Image (tube, rainbow, N blue to C red):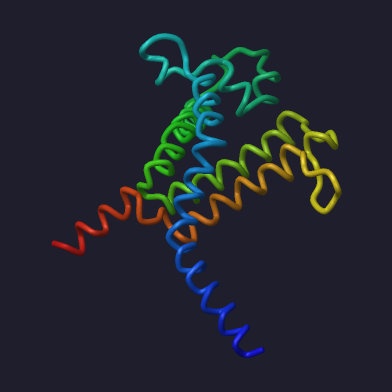
Length: 185
C-alpha cells in the first residue's frame, strides 16, 4: 500500500508542478477564447461616431451603464454631467484595456482584479439597472441548471480571473519577460 501511495504522490507531484506553469497560460487562453471578443464588442457599442468617438460615448453606452437615469432624463444626454461621462468612459476603456492586458500577460494580476470588479458591477447593473431578474437570466447556484447568465456563467468568469490573480500570468507572458529582464540586470 505504501508503494502505491508513493507512486501516486510522485506522479501527481509532477502534474502539480506542470500545472503551476500551465494553469495561468490556460486561464489566459480561456479568457481570450471565451471573453475577449465579448468585452471588445461590448466596448465598441459604447463608442461614439467617427475618429473622436473614443472621447464621445454613444447613447448606447449610457443606456447600458445608466439605464434608469437615462430613461428618467427622457434619453436626453445633455442631462448628464461630467461624472456620468467619466464613468462611461472608464467603463468603455476598461472593456478594451483590461482584456488586452490579460491576454498579453502584462500587469495580469491587477488587470484580472479589475475585470473581477467589472464583472461584479456589470452583474449588479444587469440586475438592478436592467431588471434582469427572471430565473433564466439570473440563474441560481446549486440548482440543476448550469445556464444562468449572471449567477452561473459569471461565477465561472470570476473563477478564471481569480486564478490569474493568485497565480499570475505564467511563464509565457510580458510579466515573466519583464521579471526575467529585471533579475538579469
